[in-house]
Image (tube, rainbow, N blue to C red; front, side):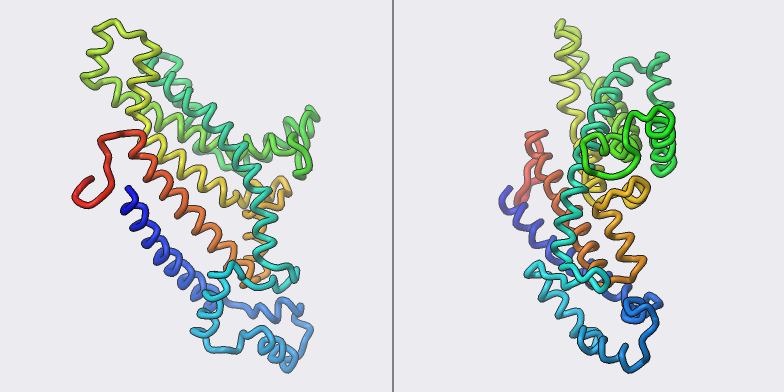
Length: 310
């Protein structure tokens, strides 16, 4: 196990290096001059050249990239061109907001999706199974921004039950959490149902049933435990997406999270802020995938990591 974790951590370094290089190259080829945008295109060519020199943007690209890597190692991504805020501070501030939204959306999706999927698997072929699957497909297919707008209109404007923007209170996170979690709840329900159906047809489940094992024990202790690997894979990946922020949801509800920060950075071509945001997103996904892989060994003792084992 330890050797596997060390190997994955070593691979993580190269993954992050590759992502940083691709991001840096793409930002250089995108049309538009960030200095001209920052100065609102009112400065003359001499002023623009002087600012570029002060910011190190006139250096060869490979030196700029090495400077970026050197700073990233120390969690120093520079200062935003437009807000003049330290990028790492902006990331931490937005991260705190996104974590709250992600956790609430994750709880909503997991509490709704996983039990619903189990129930649909147990009731396979019956009317409730069909209803659950139809609702799951609707949840997966409905655009997040459309769900967000409908929730705002119904529960915010018509009924006046919940705030439609901001992030100051717990209540202000309810509608964004539902809008963000609806799609993932549908995914979890579908995957849970499929995984449970595969397990429920195994010989050991039929044996347990023939021995008179309680239905609840058979489903929750025997079937669900062995169906958890694909569920955990999906849940972990979904939580990674939530932690990286939903650009549309955060924009619709005016929540200053990571998603909104990334949108603003792209709109302004704020290179330091955009590079820092991309590296944050890459790091979150790498860590989440590593944790998901490690969890397999605890969910299924047959899985072992190490030399000569699989």
